Image 1: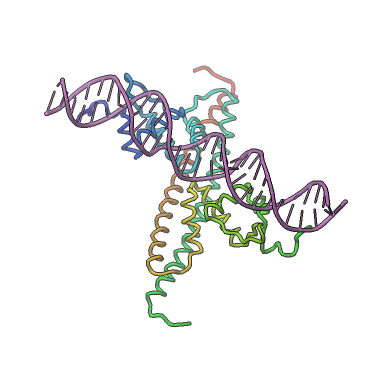
Image 2 (image 1 turned 30 degrees about the horizontal axis):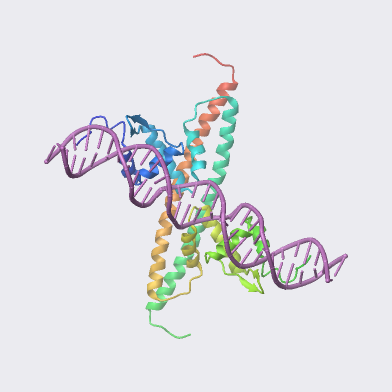
Length: 137
Length: 137
DNA sequence: TTCGCGCTTGACGCTTACGTAAACGTAAAG
DNA sequence: CTTTACGTTTACGTAAGCGTCAAGCGCGAA
C-alpha cells in the first residue's frame, strides 16, 4: 500500500472519483460551481470527510433530477450554521418546498412502476400466446 | 363557446399547453423529437386522446429526470404492437432496467426525505432555543 | 376587404453539465 | 535522467431543452 496511515481521514480526487464512479472533470466542475471546497496541499486537492459526504449528497440530488443550482441550496441546508431567526424560517420554508417536490416525484414513481407492471403483464401474455400452439380466432 | 361539440375528443395545441402548463414551443419540440405525432387538419395540429396521454407520460418522465431519448423509449413501450418474440423479450428486459432505476430513485427519495426531517427538527430546535429566554452555557 | 386571432415554420440564442484535448507540474521508481 | 503516475489549468466542443423573435397563413367578424 502507498498511503495507508492517514487515508482514513482524507482522499485524493482520483479516490473519490473511483469510489463514486464519476470523472475527475465532474468533481472539479462541482468545485467550480461552489459545491465542493477541498483543501489545497500545494496545488493538489485534498478531500475531507465533509467533502465526501457532500459529493454523495450531490450525486443523490442528481439521481433525483435536481439541477446543480437546486442541489447547491439543498446541500448547503445540511451544514448551515444555526444562524438568526430569519435564516431558520427561510430554511424551514425551503424544506417544505423540497418535501413537496420529492413527494410529487415519489407519486410519479409509484404510477410509473404500476404502469410498467401493466405493460409487463401484457407482454408476458403476448409471449405465452406466441409460444403456445396458435389457434386462429 | 366556440367549439363545444367535438372538443371532447380532440384538442388544439393551445388547449394542451394550457392544460399541462407547458409552452407551444415545448409541445412542438416534442413532436420534432418524434414523441408526439398529432393529426394535421390543413396545417394545424389536432391532438387525439392518445397524444394527450403521451404528453402526460412525457412530462411525468421529465419530472423523474429521464432524458427525452429515454422517455421516447419508455413511452413507446406503452403502445407497442405485440410484435415478434425478440421484440417482446427486449421489452421485458427494458422494463426490468427501468424498474431498477425507479426503485433506486425511490430509495434516494426516502433517504432525502428522512434527511430533511432531521434538518427540520434541528432547525425547529434552534428556533425555539432562540425564542425562549436565553441562558448562557 | 380588412382586421385580428390563432396557428404555422424557420432560425438563432442560451443555459446546464459535463467531455475532450492541450500543455504543463511534481514526485517517486527504474 | 527518463519514464510513469497522478495531478493541474485553460479553453473549446456539445447535447439537451427549450426561449424568442421574424414572417407568414387561414378564417371568422366587422
